[in-house]
Amino acid sequence: MKALVKIFTCILCAFTLVGCAYKHQQIMTPNGNIPAGLTTKQVQDAIKVGCSSYNWEITRISGTEVEAKMNKTNVAATVRIDFDKSNYSISLVESTGLMQNRSKNEIHSRYNTWVTNLKNAIDTSLKNETIK
Image 1 (cartoon, rainbow, N blue to C red):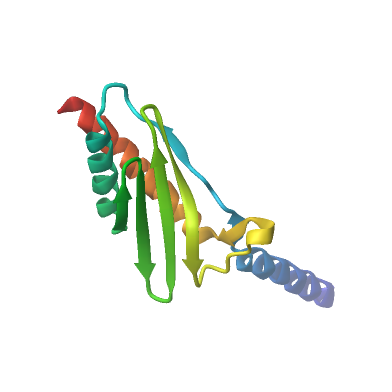
Image 2 (image 1 turned 90 degrees about the vertical axis):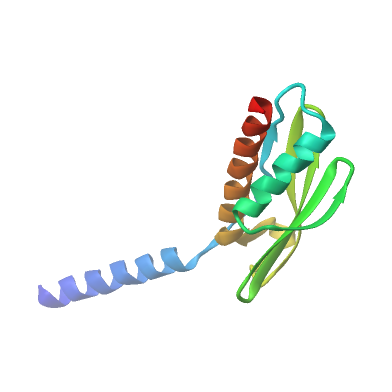
């Protein structure tokens, strides 16, 4: 009976470790709404504030497109934030050290956490722009 319990425990531990080790997820492309009445400059400013609140570095701004980069130890991601008068979207441009698999549209879960936080920060900044 003890042997059976040990075997069952070992199998359970193995499944737990395998489940925890898999950190790939589908690459997220978050998008959000832009409140009516904001100018391109106000949207750019809100995106800048959102990026800076999570240490994303703005690498390029061009009209209705902002490019930002997140650099951490041994990992990095560059995103493009496209927007128009009513919507914006965050798309992955490139990554380093995040086990990206473009053919399967997968990446390390850390990236998805980063862009989710970035989206939430941009949403908050856009709301604050409408209050000004």
